[in-house]
Amino acid sequence: MRVVIAEDSVLLREGLARLLDDGGIETVAAVGDGPSLVAAVAEHDPDLAIVDVRMPPTHRDEGLRAALQARALKPALPVLVLSQYVEERYAAELAGGGAAPFGYLLKERVADVTDFLDAVRRVAAGGTVLDPEVIDRLLDRHHTGGPLGSLSGREREVLALMAQGRSNSAIAVRLAVTAGAVEKHVSGIFAKLGLDPAPGDHRRVLAVLAYLGL
Image (cartoon, rainbow, N blue to C red; front, side, top):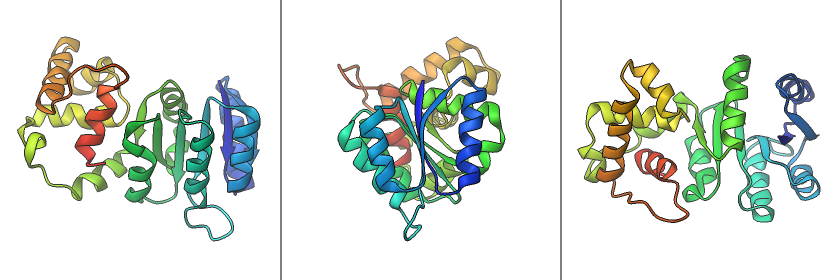
């Protein structure tokens, strides 16, 4: 796997590269601003971009803007955003209707190296990974009417874990149920949300986006 890192803090940038290297993941470029990120994606065609939301010169949303520009060059580019704070509008904009793999993690999650590397691999493989605190904030903003209101309590638990990028087997372990029970809940979620199989659609991602109101 080949990764581009965009982070303005030199210490964190180098630390991320070291963590990735220890995990067998190659960092092909590590840059400190948005334009350099876009240039690095154009030059290296990476498998994943890890991007800080707030970067120079204003430290607002330059990282996100650069990630979206990079997506214009490589529409299917998986992007894992790191943020110091929960800013749900960035998660919504990055999701972009589920057109490409994405993740949104708080920077504090990097301290758990195993989980961080797992998130990197899942996003690069085409999955969706959202920080639990991001999920909680998004859910607080949305009502549960319509098809979402028909989900059972257990289906909501399953869908929340899907939003964290968990596989069916991992969800089964977390909820202490059988894998078959999780598969049944996932099928029920798809049915209640009207997500029939269709070419090119990733129903797990679409279900998560619907649940979060993105």
